Image (cartoon, rainbow, N blue to C red; front, top):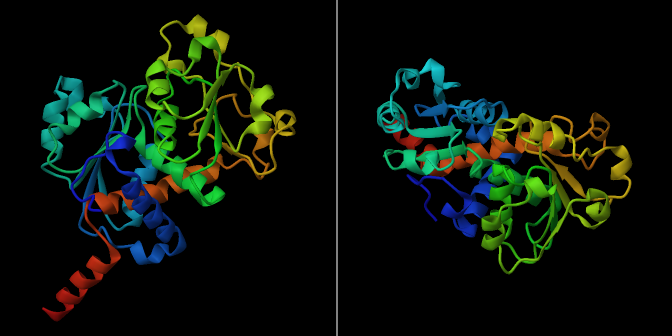
Length: 319
């Protein structure tokens, strides 16, 4: 399966086989990182972040640096010509003159698909508003597969802001492509999973509740999310809902011994720090997996492999 030159706007852009290729390569990188340390030598990745980010931006930058490539871009729009009124199309057309691939985060849903229309180099969506976050999904899939051994036969609980959470939207649609996966949606009525996501997973069992305590014992994975202040127009509504779920050591007593607690981060109050020492809490390990899966994604979209790199090196030596 060739991914060279492709875009990643949403997880469905790649087949299950193509996703498995990325996950397998990521695992190979984890097992033997030195083999990949100069695979992207001479390549440039442009990171265009119109919205604040810590893990996604730094993990992409760390990924490219660890592959031996380099980074250009901006971490907030006021440091670019966007502040002068430059259109998204013109920004993309300009940046593609300088880079080999583009990563973009933008606060407007649908902006990634729009931007990709103007890019002739691989384009990666690093989050567009409350819509999609496909590289976080790859991170989550790698975490579950590495720690559970498979992406099939799991009951996944998603808790918190399911209305605005692009990470949960992408993850649910991705996991629905695997066999015998069940979902439990845990949220207040105001933040329920959107109907279009539920429509997209027809054929898979799902259950909706506003009570975490009632269902935590049935879960293989609990995916916690923060209530996102930046998605609320009414701040009084945010204040009312921000602490609706707080996972703590007491609640964890009712969970399975092998349940994974995941979180895309950043967290606010939804996971108490007393859970951090629990072996089932894997959210910081999850963040590290994000770097490895992005290394694999960059390699695939640029058409790079260890074998090809070795051939090129031998040809250079023989010249």
